[in-house]
Length: 374
Image 1: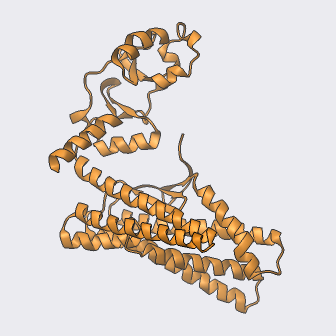
Image 2 (image 1 turned 90 degrees about the horizontal axis):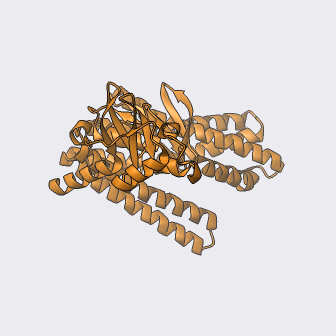
């Protein structure tokens, strides 16, 4: 099951929303409607508070999108392709196909986000003052006040020098320029990111002990998220460093065991899955590969129908998501597997299968090269 859904395209960049975003959206709307707007506008009725909260939350969503777009547009100007933007529970991320090629490019990309947030804060502050002095409805004054404050906080928060926050990327750029070593720079910046994450968790626990439950939980959630993100970002850089340049054709499994499209599921289980203990097999018809059949697919079919059901009837059909070119790199395969949810890919040439690649193959290669390279 996909974790995100495609929302739109902006400047030809696909924008996806992770389902976790709805958790944060609901929390923001609830907090605004029950606390912030009743405090700023006690004279307004609850329905108006909820309407204000929804409008403010959606404009916050747009602000976060603008923040990420600023990173993406700077990346594209510096010849770094952006596969898309995903907005999730604590903000967003722009998916780059490769790392920046120099510390200066890294710096320009990283600083673009906070600059956008500060610009938005300035715009909303100007609107707030305009609405206030010209006696616009009080609701507009309070909504723009909230958006001014939240964009200011986002800009300041992202400047904290802990990777993968924007400030951490700026810090990494400086370390990279000094050490001339991206992996070492990422390691130090990630450590700072984890240290800041633990500080937030400790601050959250302290708030809970002082009966500030909601702020405490926010600090803890953000701390755990940053800690995981720092670890994942460092692992990603290490993996790119180690697997970069490794072509799929060099390490794919070439000794392929395929099955005929007309074989029954019962025979397939007895003669293939039990015998070879693979999780999946390519399916061949008229000397051409037509898809992949997995043990999971077979288990979805009632057992009493195995003797009369053929492999072709339940295969995962051949598609771009299931195949990859032998000249692609290992990281391309890993990215495709993560995006599609398929644990293995077929290497196809002229409608014929020439190899098969699984996540385990890539991870074994990564572990082996890690040991060799120290």
